[in-house]
Image (tube, rainbow over all chains, first blue to last red):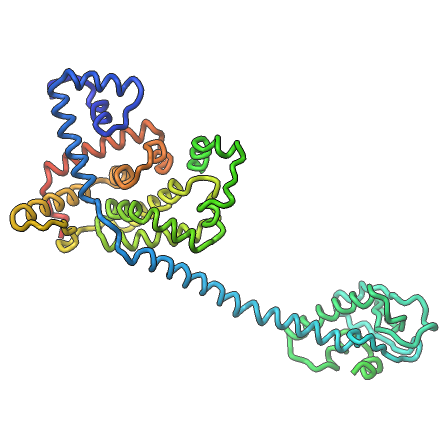
Length: 206
Length: 201
C-alpha cells in the first residue's frame, strides 16, 4: 500500500474494534482515500468469508446426550455413597439399639444387684478411666447401672432415672461396641469383659 | 479471578442495587437444577460448538468438545458466582479446554470427508468451488498458531465484547486488539500463500 495511514488502525477499523477518536479518524481517512477504502472492503470480505465458513449447527444429539451423561455421572456418585454410607449408618444404628437393649434402658428395667457388690477391674481400655461415678451413695439403692471409675473400680448402683448417666452410658457403650466390632466379631460376654465389667455383673446383665 | 472482577464492574449497578438473583437461571444452575442446566445448553450450544469447530477444525471433535465443556460446567458450577452472567465463565472454560486439547494434540487435521457440506440445491461447478474455498479457509486456519486461532475463534463464534475476550485470555484490551489484527493478517497470508493442503489429509 502506498498510503501511509497506520495499517493497524485501519485493520482494527475493518474489524470494528476501534472506538473514540481513533474510530473517527479512521472513518474520516477512509472516506477520502480510495486505496484504504479498497483495502477495507477486501478485508471485510475476508472476515465475512472466515466467519461464514464455520457457521454450522451443532448435532441434534448434543443436548440430550450431555444431560444423560451428567445424570449418569450423578447416579454413579450416589450409588458409590450408598455402598459405603448405608452399611456404616446401619452398623451404627444396630450398635445403638443393641446397647440400649442390653442396658435395659429402653424399658426402664433396672438391674438388681446387691448394694455395692459388683467389682469392676480396670482393663486398661482407653477412655473408661476418665468416667466419674454418678452414684453418691452405695446404700440407698438396689437397682441401677454400671458406673465406671478410675483404676480400681466398684460397680456401684444408683437410682436409674439419672438422665445424664444413661446418656453417658449409651455413648460410651456405642463407642466401645463399634470399636470391638471393627476389630473382631465377639460375643456379648467378651464385650462386657472388654468394657471392664466383672464376671458377676456381666452374668446379671446377660 | 480476573473474569469475576471484570464482570463485577460491568454488572456493578445490579449488584449494588441489591437485585435478587435467587430465581435466575444462573442461580438454579448453580444449585444443580437439571432443567436450568438444559436451558443453558440450549442457549449456548451453537456458540460453544462453533468455538470448538474453529479451534479443532473437526466436526466430530467439536461436538465432543461441546459436550465436555457443558459437563465440566455442571461439575464446576459451585465455583461460579451465580450473581454474574454465565456466558464469559462458560467461554473461559471452553477456551481453556480447547487450548489444552490443541496443546496435547497438534495434529488436528481435516480429512476430506470432514469438510462440511454446503446446503445448496445447485449442482456442478459452483458447489465444487464453494467447497474448495471452505477447504482452503479451514486449511489456512489450521496453520495458524494457537494464540491467533483462539482469539479469532472467540471473536467470531460469540458476541462477546473484545474486553470480555481479553479477560478470558488473560491479556489487556490493547493486547487483544493487536493480537486479533495480527491474527487476521496471518490468516490472510496463509490463505493467499496457502492452498497448501500438505497438512490436510
